[in-house]
Length: 323
Ligand code: SF4
Image (tube, rainbow, N blue to C red; front, top):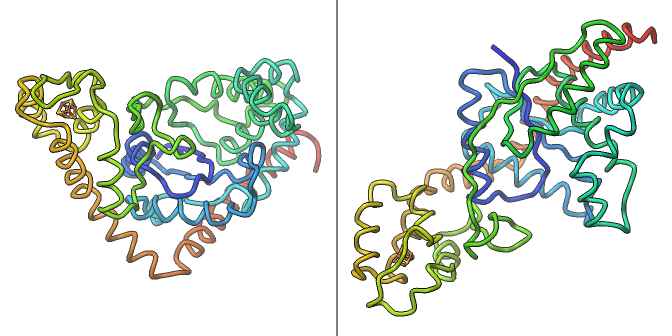
């Protein structure tokens, strides 16, 4: 089985955009690959301002992953800093990475613009650490959306340079292009995100979910119920495409013929979301009753990841004449 690596920042409780955009794909991939799912806590430090919430965020995120179907028997689920060898490899890879490559990275420029008070060294070295994350486990595939291809290309360049200088050591990681749907937030304008507060948490209660959906924007030109709506521009209709597939034709027809009011339709969407997430929520509640469970999963993941990482690092040090 090919190895797949994916890292996610510890953002705490996950929302339906995270689920449809990534977690669902994670669950599918573990059926056919050896997957490494890593909570990249060190990466988070480059932009984090409130460090007190870090551990809670890790636990809540992993709880959501497990409740959604990530299986620790099939996948190695772990926290980046629990396998500190990645930092050693990061240092070694940084010796073969020209600074110019890193300063050109658009996300570095963007982050430097967004946090001019904190343009830290970690931000510049981010792609090197990301490369270390992947190659420490000799992963061959990395699930990415099209927007992340440039980052992976840089990782491949670093790998090529290392392999040229010291002999073939790492496989060049390939992009596993996944068409992640972009899920818009409840404002109907921007991508669903916690920081924009336009999201619905997977673990929200049915009542919270309903309240959030009822506040969502719809077709902004539809002001009265007797006016036909435009499902093609309505975010509620977009969400129906994920949660109410068998009702799409009816909703489209009734909306465009002014037979369905937006409030009524939102009530229906909330019911559909709650119905779909019911098994997830039940499972999450069960897992939550086992306070040590997430800790055990992560400890076991780190143990297995460490064994592989140790071998890779030995090989790298040998190649670099450090032994
Ligand atoms: S009826 Fe539904 S699809 Fe039509 S505009 Fe209202 S919320 Fe959108």
